[in-house]
Image (cartoon, rainbow, N blue to C red):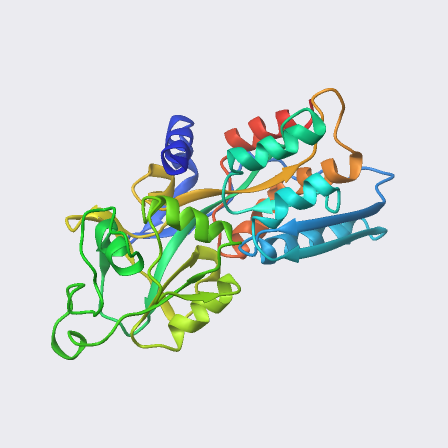
Length: 325
């Protein structure tokens, strides 16, 4: 559902106008309609961010850019998984709750039970949740059924267990090579998103090696010739390749910006920062200015620099409207 929401929103807004392609590869640029950040006076204090590991590098880079404008601001960042964000917001130990998945209904209910209103969801970037193989693996792509057959024990996509690369379609010396699977732990929003969308809410196979962070997944695959794993597109390195995915072998799509915006790449998603904003009161100035920086031209240039995909201007305008109510 999150995927369909993402693609329908972006396509409806005509977001593809901000993307250029050359030889089938993305030339990713920030939408020129996104305004530059306007610095204001009197911004001081401390911010705490607790949540997504996927967003950890982005939050750090955003914090550095923001502190360059406001030297008296202190920002602390902890990225142990998206499931830690709702708890931190409820307990008041963080003003910023970055998440690589949307908040679950039960997490929203817990927040509302304490405060009497729902947390505010702030879309901050677009991500392709990529499936990575070793750079020397000749596989071009996999269907979602094959992905489920590799990573799950429940096979809700209708396939059967795939344990070696021959069963995934490779021949020659690769045919008998065992598949080594790398994934995240259950605190991770990426784990939850992959479980919901790729495994159709099924169970992971016990052989999946759970890693403490996104970079550890990619490092594991890069050092394992038979490896396969899933992680955000911002963690791609030269040691791995992000393979094409699709609903059928005849319709496989690379995890490019264009394919995320069109909805063709099936594991596209928004990245979020949740905040505690009462509908009756304005957001505190420090949190508001930080998020305005994130959603500015400079903030979205950081998104591109970190390997993720920037927000279309229309969605930025919509999000800013919610923040400044």
